[in-house]
Image (tube, rainbow, N blue to C red; front, side, top):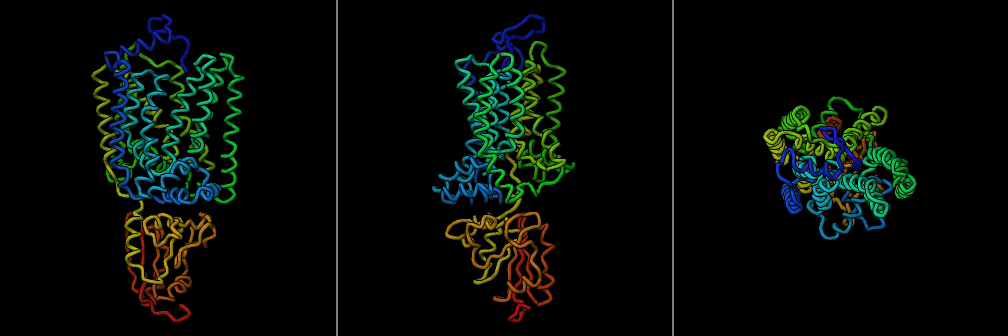
Length: 533
């Protein structure tokens, strides 16, 4: 999306080629970067990004979200497609994961597709951004994406977020080339744009909702001047046709459940959480996370002020390209914030699509600075990003340790209550005794029976056929009547709802076992009648 001409600081009209030549020779790097130099630099960013991602690939415990992805892709292919009526968002990732799970179900394998997408995003940012901001800023932006702790976190997370980010970048790159290419090549770029945008939508419906309006405005403004609106209308129809199955799936899913029922209206704590995750990534949830996020934000503010005040007078980003990147950065969070006043949708992972755009804005500011300041600001930002990338906080929910404890301590025939039942797939990932014919059971889907002795309860806003929890005293007594004992697997914030007073009144030995984000309780040696009272 390059304008046909631009006016220099001296008032002389410059061609795009002249402007690009100027930008390559003024600012942060004094010498021109030839093609091989750029290739080496981008490759170096990919190598650094690969190292930072590979060391994290299999170290973290699978989250319950990732467990649902595994449960989806674990089914036979046709059965997996049937589960999309419950899990309509991120279907592309499940399809790509399906053949890999036939090789291994390790944490590393589960996250391999996301890691590949995360690595591919680094050169994709350079490729897409050089049409918007020039080679120099594109290179700096790619380096920031390689170091971004948020991007690294999503690259080692077995969901579709990394794919949504990758295809969001590629869709902007294809769009800019389609709008600027001659008539013969424009059709090819439009076709690639449709494919990239559809891949983005089938990776994250939120990405499509928040970014397609920006695409539409860009097309209306640029294609209208070139008289290509007819061709773009056909492109729009192709997009609509491709998005129709996704719309049907999302509608069918909505008849079963509200996938965002757990979210709440934006408040200061939620905004702080979203901002912290976008800047410091998973490290934000560790002990030093708030401080790191604050340091990164402070550095970004310093770069913004310095870049705007002390920028080189002859270096600038054309107005149109600036509009595209700023819109890409700001429109999605603003839209989700506004919509969330009625229908909560604001969440950090849904906004990962803006991180490449934010990196490009920072890159543009850095290359506008005098060399010494650019080096100082860039080094400070890179240092904080690297520190946050290397920090690994404790898992939100340590299902590995909890499942190991359950398998070690569970007695034959002993009943196990899972409250809420959403935990079951994650427990079954690590505890094979909880699987049914080798598959991780998902109670909400009703496609497999629950394992013998497992009883599930859901929260009042969850979905499925399981009864609403917590289990009552009478239900616990009935479950414990066979062996005189029962185990309850829960979360710490729900532990207070479990009626352990019933067990204590009957002489049960009550023992709590707490793990990161999980709280399990065993009630044993209970004195019960044959009726369970």
